[in-house]
Each structure stands twice: as structure tokens, then as C-alpha cells.
Length: 230
Image (cartoon, rainbow, N blue to C red; front, side, top):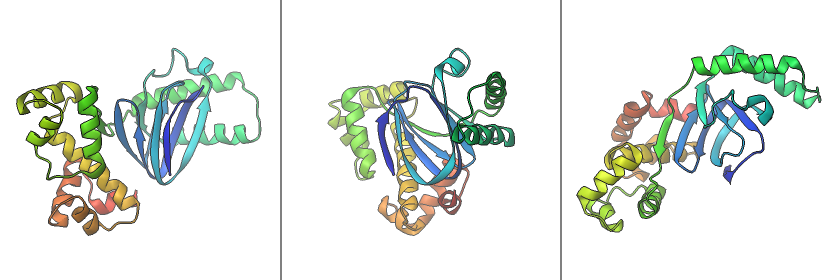
């Protein structure tokens, strides 16, 4: 299921217990697997693609989180305490339990747990330069490895050197590393849609599953089979 860019009038907490989420903001794409959670402040544009996802979602009013919670989207690891608090909140919301002073105390415990377990998800920064943004978005849709760096630079009306310099300034990554991360995110989506590891490798343009295996290990420390099961 894919959700277009949208925003909420309150903050959103979502702990992913099964599956994975490919979350999209105006600035980046995030791969968030089971065992992690995210916080999205009120008014933040975000969307995503959910694959066999189940978890706990809680919405929190601006009044309760303003000047306390991060003002940017944040990913963090779940802990038993975080899950217990979110489960209780979700249960009380279903039964219409009114807000209480206790909720503020829970929120501070949540914030303390979050700051102790900030995660480093796999992030694909999106260039801000309009032409570069469009060209790389088109490339990441198909992940065509036949497109050389010179060709991508030409599409952006830049020399290879200028393109490489601007790309690193905009994303913090070299074009080559960025393209590898885009390949991995694309591969993750293909596996989530039912493609086997071997099929995924070939669809990404690799000659063997070994290359895709090495890509997964490099950026996630996991095997493709482990990623497919999250």
C-alpha cells in the first residue's frame, strides 16, 4: 500500500513490529524495518509504501509535544518500555479514555527512551537542485545501471566534474554511493512484492545474486533473505 505525501494536525508515533516501511519526505527516502519506530511532527509532509506492515500507531496533540519532542522526523529503536506505553495509549484511545496528567508523564518517559535509542536508518537524500532532483528521481524508478555518470551529468546540463561536486554538496554522498542505496531500496521493494532474491538481482541489472548479496551486506549488515523476512 502506498500513501502519497500528506501531513497531520498532530504528531505521529509508529512502532513497526512486522514488515518494513519505505517512508518518503520532501528531502529523503527512508527504509525503516521491523524493530524500529518513527516520530513525525505535526504538519510534516510525509508518505510511504508499506509492505506487510503491522505495528502500533499513536497520534499525540501538538500541545503535548511542542518544545519537547524533536521538530524533525526521527527514527529510533523500539524498546519493551516504548511498546508497552504505546500499546496502553492505543488501548485507551480505542476506549475513549480522556487525557490525564499521567499522559504527560508517559510522554516524558517516551522521549527519554527515544533519545537513548536513536537509530540510523538507511536514508536516500533527495537533491534539492530541481533538474538534478528530477533526473535522479527518474533514474531511481528503474535503477538503470547502464546510465553512466557522464550521461546523468549531461541530463542535468552539467559537466561530470560539476555534477559530482554539486551532488555531494546536495546529498552528502557521491553519485555512486547514492545509486547503490537507491538500488538496495528498489530491491527491498521488489522482494516485498514477492520477487525472489535471484529475480531481484537480475531485475536490478546484476549478473548474479552474489552482487545483490554483497550490496545488502555493505549497507545493512544483513543478508537479502534476512531483509525479505523483516
